[in-house]
Length: 166
Image (cartoon, rainbow, N blue to C red; front, side):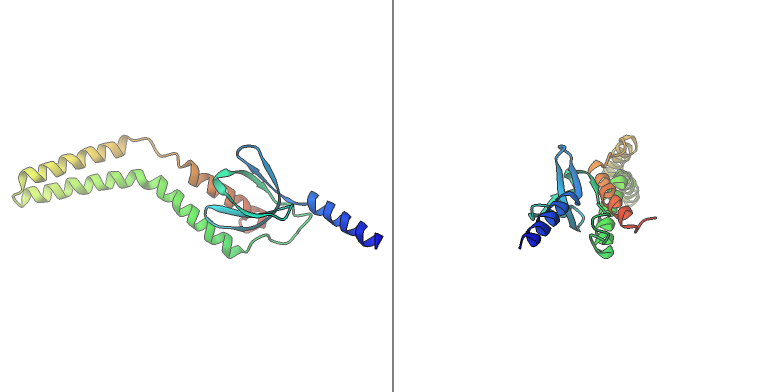
């Protein structure tokens, strides 16, 4: 009986020490195990046994303890789905500026076409709006895309840790 209690106490102490670590943006560190991911959340079980979802936007860094548990934390398909969606959001954010430029050019072309059909004043109005939109799109600073970039960075780190990215 004493041996089993001592073994249980030892395993509990080892489990508390050997854990994955999430460092949140406010400096809080969570010890436990990564059990899942999606585009916006990391699913984590703390060393106290509490399961929950942590928004990736709140995570500064993640460290996986491979010495304590050499098995993959999540499936490659689950990770691929999450990283694909996060990368899509990042690419959409980065190219949004050029959507304004393209829309402005379409308005200019549509206004010119309407002007040739005899709708001169309306065509000129559309060309003027298109010129303003195109100019604003060209001179606007590129978007920072901080939130999608941070999600891609954390998910990329998880992929690197698992060896899915070389």
